[in-house]
Image 1: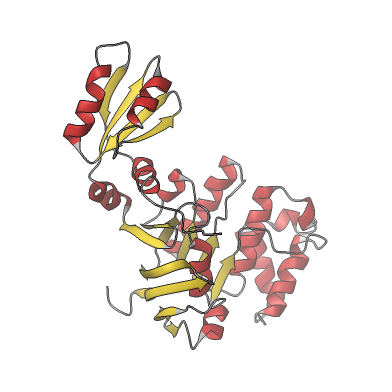
Image 2 (image 1 turned 135 degrees about the vertical axis):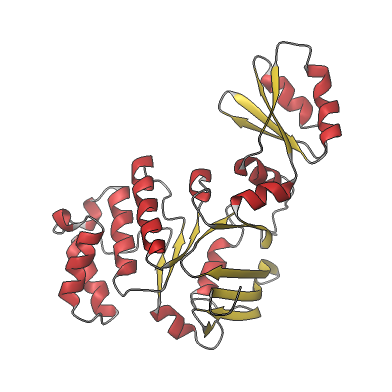
Length: 308
């Protein structure tokens, strides 16, 4: 990747709080016009990383650029060109949709403010609700308003911190349709999410667990690099099977609806563990490894870095 292609290019990014390392020497490169998915358990440093990238936090170690600006020395310049959508709705609930957008446009000194607010209302499908108070909106409409506020000043980079948490599936799909259209128009998006269907819609993925960046690449690359053998089990006594297999080191077990997914890097070891259960009334078949299987395996091999 050339420097011209890299919207984000950071190396050794580190943040500590007292003795705890929250983000531990993370390297990241994100290309222009791509949707970069950021995944990992709660408390793993995703939000802290996002805040360092957009200039809200100064890293304790590491260096790099965001939008061509030095993340240490030019954080104010970065903030002028980034749209940052936080986990919690941060606009004024006692103002209308249009009043909120007008306020944000004033803060960013957006040229031709009224015209830009009107265009943004139409772009995000908010025009018919422009007079509705933000506090009366559903989760999905609040999310759409928050995205509109991020886009008003025409940023080059969107940083979205779990933007669809608590939003219904239809609103999530519509939100992601907007993101893909924005990426086609050249906007770069870094988004943290816990939803596997959303992760699969990202061009590139990174998995961070308790401060450590464990894996990154496309979804196909991450599945291939995990080198997991995966089986699906259905039928009675699944609870007994899960309990027995969890006693084995290196075997990952997770419920997928009414089935179990069982995976391991050792094909022979997994076959040996499953052998006693094959002659019973369980249906055990080999299946393709999914992205969720990979993330479950990664989660089961990480340790929380929180210390009291």
